[in-house]
Length: 333
Ligand SMILES: [Zn+2]
Image (cartoon, rainbow, N blue to C red; front, side, top):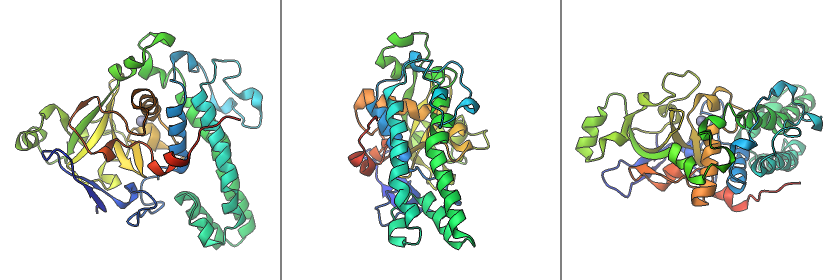
């Protein structure tokens, strides 16, 4: 059921029909159900994207060669893999600081779990957790457990099990390798990895026939089954997000041969790759890291620049929530 329909400037292109979960939380049509809808884009995810947009470009010589997240302990600074490895990119330093800031900012939700006016401001997942806490027989211990899980996510899981993992040569490195190392020109990022404006049609539509009918270039009209996530279990489909097809969408075509749609969701976009969706707590995949770098260096904006293809509505390229972008300032301690 679509809640917002965005007409395309080009009348050959179908409108973008968005579900309530793709809207901003301040939009009165916004609606999101934890446990039913695909994971929301948490405020920290928007902030981390902004941190990497504002940070230096990630080069091959920033990446970890071997890193085992089991060896990482947030309470033991000597386990930081960047201590003895490459220089830690400042985007990652900003992101780690943003995580710690959120721990401090979210304290108030744990202090007044009964105050629904305060909880209304909490990220949706946390709000649902606190609601469960209130129904628990032993509220105090349930609250303490919920707080521990949340703090652990910010301090340990996001850096150690997610961001450090994608900042490996075997992960992000596969998108920027090209063998050019630190001298890799900014342009090479977008020569090897291309964001394409496309129209995605339903499985029972013939893309070529649709392209002819609409007078669109047929190489940019796809069925979802042509993308790399189609055969993978953890990856949700575009329809799972409630996006109506045909839809104008941005597709990332990556140097390693994979192609993933970026789905309008949670006031931004989410990559549809299996890595991102295999674990709901993951806040970034290597494709989103690349998109952040490209936003920072190609356009200095929260919109992913389209390199080729069909002109699609701006909303299909808006990577970060404008509300969060207006207030977030990357900092290091
Ligand atoms: Zn991805």
